[in-house]
Image (cartoon, rainbow over the protein chains, first blue to last red):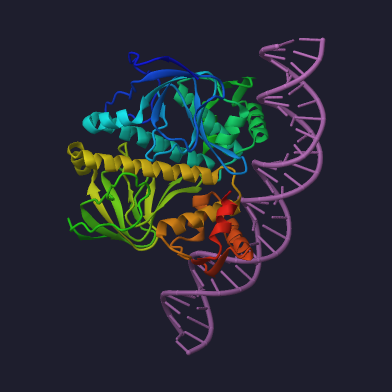
Length: 223
Length: 223
DNA sequence: CGGCCCGTTGAAGCTAATCAATGGCCGTGG
DNA sequence: CCACGGCCATTGATTAGCTTCAACGGGCCG
């Protein structure tokens, strides 16, 4: 990890942030900017949660491990997304850079102070938590009693929506990451990619470059 | 559904509510009390989310349906738990009474007004969302790539913790409810109950009355 | 050019789903 | 009080889908 600057000027974050009902500007943290390389840990499960983070560029994954080594990914975070904001004293997940990543971090205590004085900020934090909740609930829907094809189709469509990509999807994450997010094995994910390509719903131009050929059919698969 | 009274005096809710870090009293809504019978709908997915609810007695289930009829339960709500608090205009889940239930409801707009003035209330609402998020994330962990025994063991232990039961668990919900919560079929849930009894970890005194014989072994199963 | 990592593909095994039948509990009515 | 019917849970037999184990391939970097 390398620290690049402290208290830079806030640039508006252009990435889509989940819930948007009342006209609310996306949250922008203020604090120092850091960089992380591929697979580098930003914070670990169980560490003190003193800092809150926001992705500036790249993609971050959060996950928890079971005692036997199985890994469950909780989320992929894109530019604009915040993470590491805990109610308790400790981080409940590990956060790692999927590829090269830059993040802005802010002291949690500072954010709490601001929120105590600024009702608008408090509201934003609430929306943030609610947005994460919504995400997590959608994740539950994706895992319970769904076939591999349903899970992968849903995953791809979610990525399309989040990244604003029209048809050409760049997957920053490995097959293993996808498998651990969807509760499948890497082999099943790979086979399911091939299967969807066989249906002409996607085109695997490279293993991390997917063309969405028939988004509507993918939606139908999601049921 | 039957309305019983309006603006009753608030009684302190004694049920355990998830996160508890700073000394915070549990949230108590103010509003009218209603009763619902078994399987009665409190609100439906897609309806306008004008009211927020808190369970006074009984158990409530929330779920979403897929187009082919599969049902994914999101949560079981016990006394003290709040539900129906949405960011958007519509309810994202359906809420039903598992058995006989009484709830207190409050106009969302009223709650919003209070929260705008009362920073302490706003904080409570945030904690509430954060608690729900934590629950949902635990649910994700329970669904991704876990065996039926792991899921059921985790479910039973979660119930023990939430209800404060020592060893004798009263299950208010049907096997179908459990199956739809855990992403399994009713047959698998039933077989897994039998399997855990075979290991002498539980004793099925009646199909809705379970004695936890070896909580530690159940925890080990959860991995 | 060679090695390594990641992804794909193949074959066999296993877990949970599906299809089907039985059993037990409870409320109703004879 | 007992018989019947309906609902829920359990159990059995079979099937389907995913995992596991294994080998191969292809791209990237030294």
